[in-house]
Image (cartoon, rainbow, N blue to C red; front, top):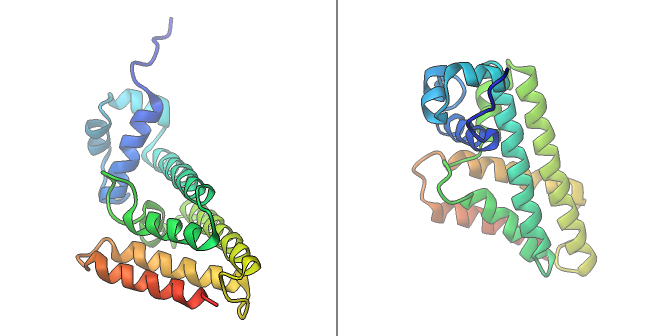
Length: 192
């Protein structure tokens, strides 16, 4: 007779995600995970597999959470400028009580060159954000909020690159005001 799980999988996956986000993949040991997740080692292996599989699941969880947050922000916006500002705010400010930076960006920098699965997940996540930015830019171009001098896809790629840079810089002691200035400059490039 099998025992039922005595923990919520989503809750403990969120805890693993937070730890990987704070420490990175390489610095996070199985002992760290067991302690932080509050489950037994055997339960971790039985439920999530090995460390790498758990990490990939944490990346998927993070991607879904960020995608949901971005969608909510865009859907609440009255115009394209407001939608873009919402995306930028999420990139810079993140969620309350979350580590700084972006788990996907951090993981891509740490592992993508030598881990095909992380590389693939990073690229997919980055392409989703670029598509969202492109849709916002097209909306703004259609409504006359943003310049039509440049191609929306190229602008989206540019803004995503700025976003990756901002999320990387968040891991440093650079003042948030500087990051806001960079974001504001990027917004002005789009203005008509």
